[in-house]
Image (cartoon, rainbow over all chains, first blue to last red; front, side, top):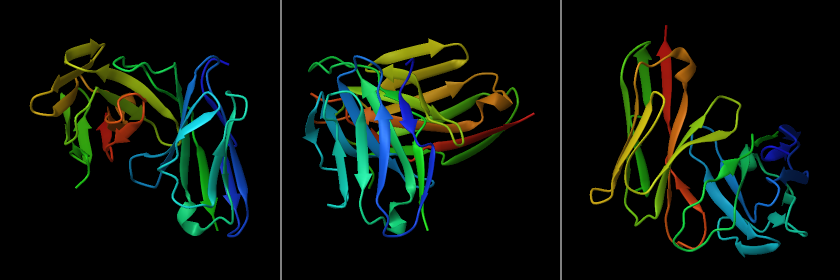
Amino acid sequence: GAGVSQSPRYKVAKRGQDVALRCDPISGHVSLFWYQQALGQGPEFLTYFQNEAQLDKSGLPSDRFFAERPEGSVSTLKIQRTQQEDSAVYLCASSPRPIRGENTEAFFGQGTRLTVV
Amino acid sequence: KNEVEQSPQNLTAQEGEFITINCSYSVGISALHWLQQHPGGGIVSLFMLSSGKKKHGRLIATINIQEKHSSLHITASHPRDSAVYICAVRGPPYNTDKLIFGTGTRLQVFP
């Protein structure tokens, strides 16, 4: 596709339900990021993949959050036993392989707005 | 204290006004991004800067590395410029594209 695609665009989950959010990065982009954006706030880093390797998951807020990218392209962010505080927009971004000392553009998807009721 | 601070948080303007949004950061960076986010929409990258100044249409972005400060200017503002403008920096570790975001500046331009 032409850009980063995320699905679903909107998700309403009952508290305690598990959800799975999908990100299709730009074809050939090696780096993939997940960010969480609470209402009125800037996005905050969750996790980073380089190909299928999850190199940084320091931003995941709890062990209920899990992300994978098994074949180095599509990624899924899974949230187990959702809580109200998980309500946010989840943004995915991809970029070409980062090379130390070089700066590359980040391309963002439209986001998935998760509301936990 | 946030590593990336933006001001103002909210900004209203009349069509045609010159607009400035400021960003200050406290970490060493390899690049700074200005991003635009429309309500309900995703994020669009406007500029990526590591020094100096860039211009695209009515948008101008500047960065002063020594002062750890960047500004985004919009000349001849238009209602379609209404959006949230977010400053984000690429800080350590420098071998990734991980971004640290400001909280954004909500701009409303009235006709």
